[in-house]
Length: 113
Length: 123
Image (cartoon, rainbow over all chains, first blue to last red; front, side, top):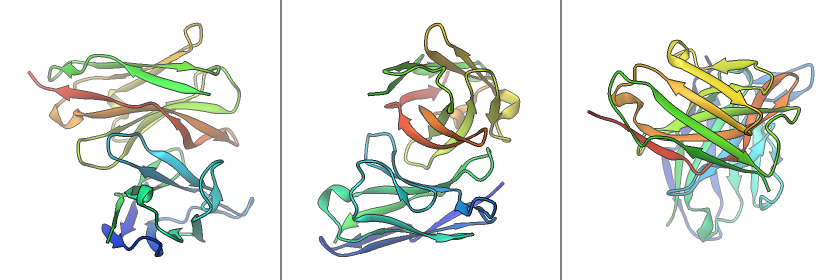
């Protein structure tokens, strides 16, 4: 199974500043025949289910603000919030779906500094 | 708008079987190219995928839970269900149901989630 790790465990960013979360997979999730990375990002606020932000590593889900962007390839990925808003306080998870033994990262908590 | 709602007992005794149902509204569980899955989250911890299935019966489950997991679908009721046998306190968690996009015959990301239901395993 692919083991997912995330860094940092938590970060505090000033309003309007950039927040960057890292996600690393123990195995590559890049599929060369279709040139896609099998990775998604979710946002979870307290008491709520996760919300899909990004899939295929960089495709934003419909309705997700464009301040959220995903990047990376192979085993190393990033989620960037370009200008942190108060409503972005949450825990963020990456998930690989390269094989149907889906695994999530441990999560990164984002707070306001 | 698609909605999913989990239902089932909030308290299960150790060694018994946890049974949950997810009712889907606003869409058909028999829609092609969608899978239906279960994910859990122990209090204060991260997400763990349990298993997923297609309405026609194809099923995938976590290797660590496979021997105890059964997922089924009832297309007539637009519901799918989870049974987890021989539960222990370690199975206490919020259980979410979700819809997964299908791609090339396999389930992928979860694009719709239920609100989740807390299940506690205790005597």
